[in-house]
Each structure stands twice: as structure tokens, then as C-alpha cells.
Image (cartoon, rainbow, N blue to C red; front, top):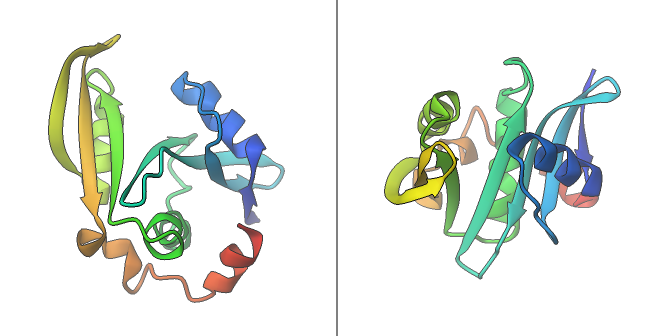
Length: 147
């Protein structure tokens, strides 16, 4: 059975997979049984924009419900107008995934990643399909009570 996990263990799990350190980040993870299968961490909130990092194992984690949860937090709960995601040029699977989610390529930071450029993507709240049915949270109180 899948369930949400919120807290530092999610941040640590994502850090291990994206090879970064994100002090002060918030994490929302999806566990299948006792093991995490996906996690999203949010950092660098400045009142308008928040940066997120996504890590997952396998392909069966991206449920409508979880996608609704991970976009509800930044856009609805904290009021972000946009989300920024950075992906290494050599990580084609992640680039394809964030583009499929609806992120738009915004900039390249030349030579800023071990695989080449660091590609910056953004999503505006107005463009986020995960805030509408069939993704929108039907029980947002479950997440909001735990966050």
C-alpha cells in the first residue's frame, strides 16, 4: 500500500539519488510498504519561486494522486507562482520526464553540470494541470495536516 512520508528522511533519500545537499529543504515522499519509491524536495523559497528536485525508483510511482500532492504543496499551500527545476544535460530520462510534466525549458547554464550544461526548467502555476481534475486533491486536508 502506498502512503505519504513527509520529513527529513525524504530529503536525505532524494539527496542520495540526485547527489546534492539541500539544507533546510522540505520533502514529500511516496512509500510503497516500508520503502520510499519517490521523493520531491523543495528549497530556496523566495516568496514567488521555489526550486524542486525529484527522485524516483521504478515507474509506478507517478500516480494522479501523488502528482496532485507534489504540485499542491508549492502552488496552493505556500502560494508559489512558479517552480524551477534544474536537470543535467546528460540526464535524458529526467529531461523527458519534466517536459512531460509540463515544465518549459527556460535557460542553459553552459558547462555547469558534470554531463555538460545545466538546463533550467520552469512551470507557472497557471500552466499546472495537476491542480485541476483528475489530479486535484480530493482530500488535501490529509497532506496539509501532516505538512
